Length: 191
Ligand SMILES: CC(C)(COP(=O)(O)OP(=O)(O)OC[C@H]1O[C@@H](n2cnc3c(N)ncnc32)[C@H](O)[C@@H]1OP(=O)(O)O)[C@@H](O)C(=O)NCCC(=O)NCCS
Image (cartoon, rainbow, N blue to C red; front, side):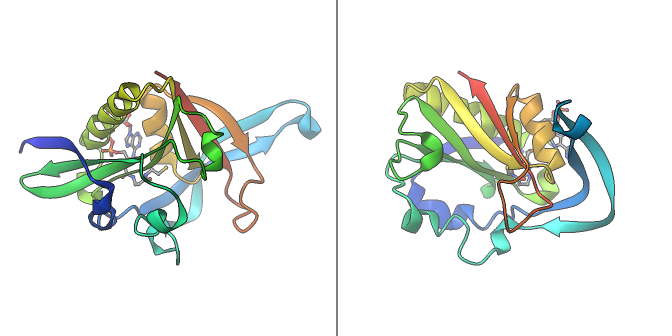
């Protein structure tokens, strides 16, 4: 079936929210430090004993419908994927938002804030098609770089970003005090 990728008004974030973002965690990218911290950080894929579902959408007070209340989304972009007249995925790009620390006040930087594909259609190229349009969207606004945050428990997303050509620029083991078992991974792609 034909896949259509198109930009939509951010006012449709409520529809984007209906695509589940949840994923199964059956392995992690274990972050460890060698030689008492002086030998570098090691990132190693490891299966976990008790798999679980991670769902950012289920966290109270979080999610796409909250973003316009928390941030100035005037310049943000919503890229949607439709197949056979049905929404099957989408990506949200944060741009020129003075209240978003991660943008560091830069107008030549975009953040891939969110990307999600309907679970039954994952791994069939929809994420790739969305990502390409996200890059084009950012380039058209004069961006020279796109940045992305993910976590070491999201192994499929890490493989996805690596496959899209992103460079892993940072590992922060202590970014989430409430989730000490998760590490923050920061990626970027020069445009
Ligand atoms: C991450 C996500 C958007 C990727 O979308 P997708 O449509 O499944 O990805 P694609 O099919 O376009 O995959 C493109 C490439 O990514 C890699 N990839 C995607 N899913 C992968 C997986 N589960 N394991 C390993 N590699 C994977 C593959 O290398 C693939 O390239 P290839 O087909 O040439 O091998 C999707 O898995 C998703 O919706 N996940 C849940 C939400 C989420 O975690 N969002 C990111 C939050 S940071």
